Length: 319
Image (cartoon, rainbow, N blue to C red; front, side):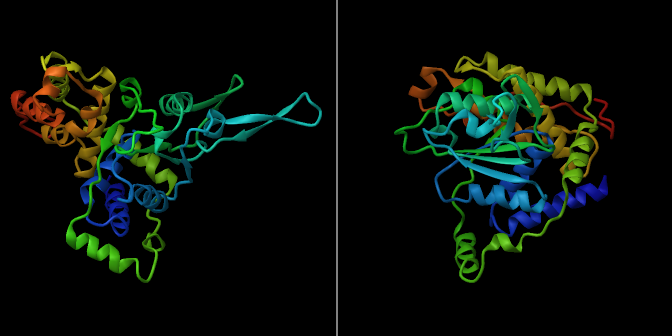
């Protein structure tokens, strides 16, 4: 385990060369990758969302494709199509952009709902079906999608049922002053992506994902996750709470967090550290909450305060 833990830390170090001052975001993206999840980055243009995806693909030797989503992008651009041969009887599959290890869906909210649905189906199933023929996507496989929260003209926002397919939603935010100065200096003489070294191969990533699967979760942690999620369904200010898919995402993210903290078992702080990233985009507030300027983040902070974590005594977490 230590060998792969070291590789994970070195991957973050390499990405941090390019995405400066965002170590926490880099860590959460890697956590989602190890938990076999997909990531939604919602932020303003130019803060490094595409650069983040490129740096991860290079550090992990992943085949990378990027598709700029616009209203004229078709589902076949994503999943591919069959092209008839000259004999008119046989056909050849032409892969779509999704057939890779790391797919960047840039500005996913600017394409049609049909194209969004085609992408989200592959994200859920891990397979591409074209003309009744099903093909597995390469392993490992992950999607990083971006959304621009401003400029709503010509956009098709993802409905809540589709947002639920993303394991986490993150906001990168602007860099602090020192980080931005370093970015300006760095770009004067080179492209920082050229400095990113390959730390792991595809097989290493799959092995790390398998190690995350083996992380021990005590019954009291299962109960803690269930109680946290249950509060989102019972809160009178929340119209739509977190689904069972969200509970699974929270558990898997907590296990990956434990791995990145060099542990083979989950503790309550692993759950707490990713709770808002996993659940905020799955929740719809009641009108009275919005009228009173109550945010989802405030409600989630209250839930973390209300639900007391279990007291775990030993390494195998017997409460």
